[in-house]
Length: 435
Ligand SMILES: Cc1cc2nc3c(=O)[nH]c(=O)nc-3n(C[C@H](O)[C@H](O)[C@H](O)COP(=O)(O)OP(=O)(O)OC[C@H]3O[C@@H](n4cnc5c(N)ncnc54)[C@H](O)[C@@H]3O)c2cc1C
Image (cartoon, rainbow, N blue to C red; front, side, top):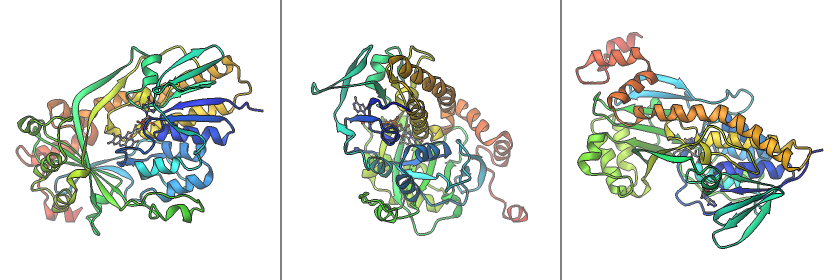
């Protein structure tokens, strides 16, 4: 028979909430402390993959998993990452990362705020508003200290508290948050009633026309299988989800020269400046893209610095562990951070749910086993996300090399041969029809 532990979680992002669901379902007592229960600016689109979806399937009660599927994006024509030039001619495509799903609806994309709302269903006795300041670990337990002086005690503390984790600061003071100096801008446009099929692919990356002075636009549809606010009733769940109108997420990485000339900085750039810059970037591109950027509301834009966590490879396991962005925060290039956070929750829950003893030795062994597995799948991906960043951040010489790795040398050379200084060969209608 497995034991019931008292487990404390720092942070109620997607990872912490999913872990709380999985531990509660298995009969543990869980207390999750979240400094911003209402969520703040958490409304962007999350690309979901088989790893994240499988984790949710394991962790959630079945009706909540159905709600996740119901509120996910409708299945796209191609559930792949597709690269286009700025006139929507295909340059290449890649499968998404993550496990292949065959026995259930595929993972597509979720609206982050919706996912967080649905993960909170049934956790009224678990989620507590409060900011964790630090913790004290003893042989027989761990005690957290909140900013307002409150304390709580448990058998284990899981730091799921994001890139700037307070738990990590104490557990691994040598870890550092690295700043690439780059930033990306995110916005959304109402989903037009009809769009060229290319723009409806799983995730779309559009490159601008010049090789060495470029910007990149990423586009991702969020159009749920069932309207978000109607989905709980359809899944037999008595809960309310905030309505979300279908949208196209627009993420831009501006050319370095534009950032320099306009004196743009991630901490001072305004919504109107972000929109103006993107409008300038897409001038002359496919008219559907131009229209969507024009339709995006300036106040919906936000900028995010491209950062990652440089953590030591190994450390002594204890009653305090780290998960999600707190230990492997990475640039958003691969679109997998949330999926990895969910996988961490799944793996950690599996180790804890099987424990036959609540002794310190048993808990620490479970934590050690989780940490070893997590390092194996997550750390190589942090490295990959960092080295691919150039391809999504403008065509510096390094960026060009990384792009070649992404789309392949053939399409890249063809593009270069076709037009001087232009990335993409102009379309030849006769040739295209013949193919
Ligand atoms: C714009 C953008 C787009 C992205 N797109 C994707 C995508 O498409 N697919 C994907 O998989 N990933 C994506 N990511 C990455 C993904 O959002 C993160 O990897 C994921 O949210 C990490 O989850 P987490 O639970 O570890 O941390 P977080 O989601 O960061 O949650 C941490 C939580 O801890 C709370 N907290 C922090 N400190 C404390 C404290 N001291 N006490 C109490 N609470 C605290 C915070 O308020 C927060 O709620 C994207 C990220 C960004 C910024």
